[in-house]
Image (cartoon, rainbow, N blue to C red; front, side, top):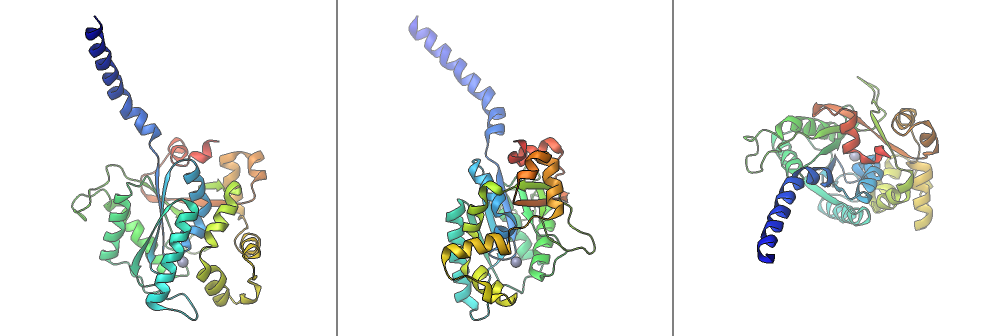
Length: 297
Ligand SMILES: [Zn+2]
């Protein structure tokens, strides 16, 4: 009797497993987020807090720098600077618990060429991305502009099997979004989504603090605020948080109110906002909440 019931029980268990796993797996499967910036620091500035929340919730985040950062410095350059920037991104990856790729394209010389588009298509496919976030094509920096074009140009092609056929196409089109910026022409940024990053602001700043060559050397030099950079490590982080990168735009506050309700939004001190790109899949509200599960709270 026992030998007869056991296989029947096992069969039932296997059947239930097979029935349940595909749907349950879909719900429980971690999301794959890829943020693509032009330089080693762009994703960190624009999406570091959102990345930290995704990681805390058990999802996978990759940052990509499309250039190697080998030009943006006043006293260093070339291969040695690229190496330093790569080391800084490795430290960011460690601090945030993410993956960070740096593509070996020259800083300040990026163009929207087919080889780089194929690099980006392969990266998005390899990451099996659900969400892709990059710059808008309106931007002061040509590397940001061309990164935006490259990512937009990848949005449809990630699903086309004959393009970059060495890397299998995605079976579903990801949602593509833009990082927030302040450029007004030809059209200003629309905050479709805002993520309250108040709970992880120190983690975001700690990650940014790893980009020593950017936040404490190059950007203060080019921005003419070199004298402001504090000496000590603790003072530097506080300075980054309060003086340089801490404020919320009115658009972000409005979007926070929409997603979190006015009460919770009023308590938020820091936010990151994103605009949904017209290319890629167009999510409804339910889908946005699935892809940005922190908005369900
Ligand atoms: Zn940049």
